[in-house]
Length: 413
Image (cartoon, rainbow, N blue to C red; front, side, top):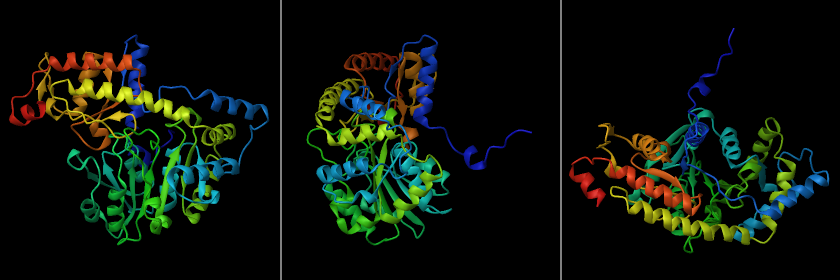
């Protein structure tokens, strides 16, 4: 007798980013040299003082279970960080720590969604949002937010999506994949709509908040308008700003009753986050933040290199992102083109596969993020890799025969 897999897991799609990484790893195992722009993590090592903090923590015996909500020291460090960086005053009791931000998003939806409840997800979105909602019995309500709105949700779009079953609006700001950041004014406009619908919670995924360029600042709804704080959840973590992806420390700021519910789920699943990872995270948050600033300086140079390189390729248009370490170029002008072998590039996924085979460049398709006709490239890569990648993409695109139609000709200019 075979083990039966549940219907909900059968319907679950594999993570697009994890699948892309697996494909790159398989090609490299075959000896193929790949220029990888799929990476969703810093290419830097964790700063030495954070590693040393974990080392000392382990030597001192900090290798046991912690409370499911997270250590008091880490939760206080997060509370201090929120006051310092975000202008938000919350007690440590309203903070919960888990094994990465993704687990907290999953558990918050698990704690709050009943079958048929709706979650509004602006596209492009982080690839896992719709599947996490569906796996927890909810209905993802996806709305396309293209370049004409700066890849952001507008009040009119939001108003048209809310029903009596709407339970959450989730927004990733700064955004993966676009780097878009909602301004204070844009949040105020969205909040005005949400005030008319008190059943809707506001979840912000702010994991990229410190990787921002040219003076752009992140804004949290509960800081913008404290009157909606009891409906707000902030999800954040250590992975991106501190190059700590493998340490698996995320945190959330929640209303008290939601904290209790999430802690209950954690207690029945993973018990707690890694003890010495929590100690290291405490030091990271409390110590001098120049290590984060130093990484942003390097990201700024890479951002310029990749944007300039992509915009030099006929048929590709790329706006410089305000934050995060991704670009989301428009490649609609290349769709409908033919390869030298006579194969037609119909979709952004076709283009991704063509560039992987022809140029040995790995990147992500916009369809995986809910917005076809675009690509996502990470510039968490060395300037050498970026330069080589742009050259390889340009050479591969030059071999395409562009479709002869006015739309493509205009977009290619």
